[in-house]
Image (cartoon, rainbow, N blue to C red; front, top):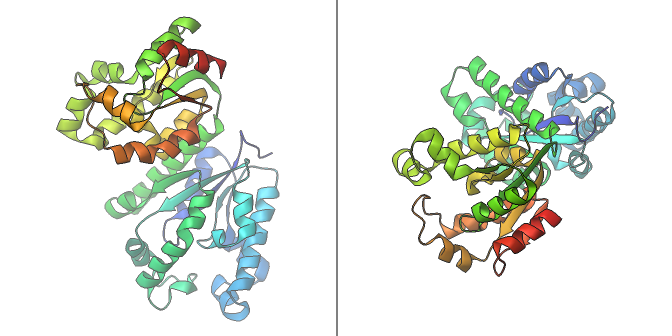
Length: 346
């Protein structure tokens, strides 16, 4: 039976993102049944999607679609579902997709790229006239609805653009599978993870918490230097921030996957990606050390091992920290000991 630990997996996104083929492969990897909502609609209606649009109209098609989604998500076995590109248009469907027994993965790409993939497909009547303009319009219209229901996001364009289709879809299915397994492991790892911007005191507080709990302390920056032989700043300067963020994510992911309970000081960037946030969600306790921008700037001014972070990036990450945190502590006027008290009390 589907529940928070064994959710249905619903792939959403505009036409051309590969929901059906990627979803079918992911279902095989997860040993779950697969369902394509368009295929079920055609079976129920006794006609093709194009014919439903032509003979019964889009409102009737959306009714079929909402009924199919409701029925499959009410069935017992957790299922991988490829939802139609417009499924999120219907409020009833959006309300169901945000329930805790559903894990929604949004496959994204640029409208022009999707138009080039979807144009001329017989089952996509909305794209008949001007695929590029229509796809752009649909992207703008539906974007807020996708954002309202999504748990994780995958940009499929680099793989589908640059790799042979079979390899690209297989790799994207691996990503969906990995994300699903992380979702299934939510709050099962007995770790205390400290998140927050550079200068929020993660290392200082983390060592206090580790000492009090008798757990090892894992400092992301220290592990990076041990693994790479370079500081985070040196990696960023030589290889770029994306390369550094990949290393930072791998360090935290390895630490959270370790069976030994620990206290982990996470790099600030880990919340930037869907995978990073899913990794953090697997820890039983995630503490956001929240600090005022002036405090952060003062504390970070003399650091030499971390690259400079734009204040706008720090502000953008705030809702992401809130999303993953089980405890939030305002650290501005507190000592490390006082912050540790609050972290352990939470």
